Image (tube, rainbow, N blue to C red):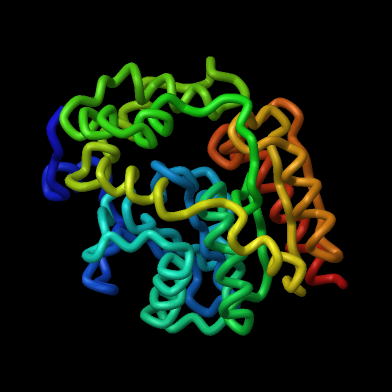
Length: 292
């Protein structure tokens, strides 16, 4: 499957309220929903090879009462590759803050899944005055040994094969990769596979994935995790075969006062696999924090 332009993909994947804002030479695909008077908006950050659509269920449950901002991180979704091929964790955090600046958000609740979790907590380390609360969902950041790696990630990490992936991308490979990160592979629908497949073929995204996997190594900021001194919720799918559940225990231990909620039957993307139950855990966390 050859690359497809943003213009080809927009009609299906950038319907209202999608907008594009220019930051660091990128046209960032973003959705900003809910009441504008919210003092601490919620910012949702997706993981590797995903997009802002992974949060649809959460946004539907939150947007009536809270301002909810989500966007495609550089290298993924309709935002696409950076101008300078910089996929360092520092650069991702800088872009998050530039988005906050552009939207005139002083402090936000950062919620991140997988890579988005890493970007969330690293932003809280580098820019502590911009992050009010933190929610880490099957977050990366510690070195880990995966029980099972999605085939798409394996190929993107393998020289020669990753060159081939630029030209050829069987839909079955994408389907296998998505099923690999779900606790219940049977719940992966053809529509879900189509979303991942279409957005992976956005011009430049396949090469960006190769570069992203080369540039961000879990573990480089581990000594700074214990610096985090803010209300933190950790959500983890116990069937996560990419980032094992014992990593949840490390976050819980190193972030003093954090809360940990496990979902026994969910996998690596619990917010997408079961938005109802996971967003309720988030809502309970916010309610409890308000009462404290």
